[in-house]
Image (cartoon, rainbow, N blue to C red; front, side, top):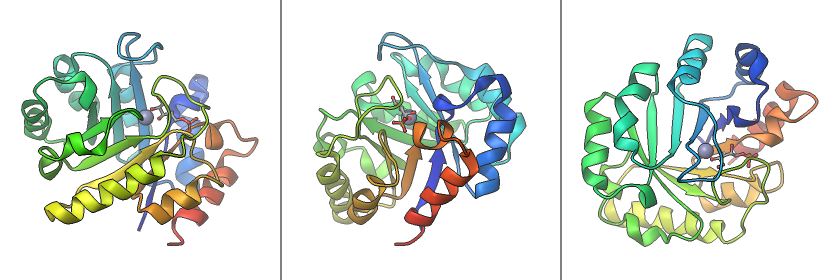
Length: 219
Ligand code: DX5
Ligand code: ZN
């Protein structure tokens, strides 16, 4: 069954614990944390300190998405902060096999993300060792952007790749996910729906998460 991972990027950080509780009450499966460094993407967010704060606020798995250059330098910090999965960008890592191995050695699930302009093909040699493949459906860096339609084809390609390799990685889709875009994304075969603004910018956060959960759990 598909999973919902609300992204706290769009949350109100003045009361993070309460914001997480609101999506937890709706039945959210994971909490997604977007780490940005102002180099790999043109925006800055937060680091291990906030991940640690999220960790102390929930028992839900924390899915940590590193949109940073040289992610290898910070893997241990995020693992210690309480990440359950760490996702690095294919475009930001030179020795992807080494990085994935290192993440797993830290006792954390390893994921690889690709930008909208990166073809799924580049994951062919690494996909078998990854626990998660994340398809960016917006250009990383900001919440609230419009879903890029071409991502649907890439989700289908990732499903094909998994089949061809007889692998079992989860397929995550990140960016512009709402009540409308989640439907074709579900049809295409997405396993983990990451959604920020459609949940945390709604008037009723719990109701918005519930509505999205009703769509994605209905395969
Ligand atoms: C974008 C981040 C996303 C973002 C999604 O760079 O990786 O996780 O929070 O936010 P929405 O759902 O607003 O597109
Ligand atoms: Zn993300």
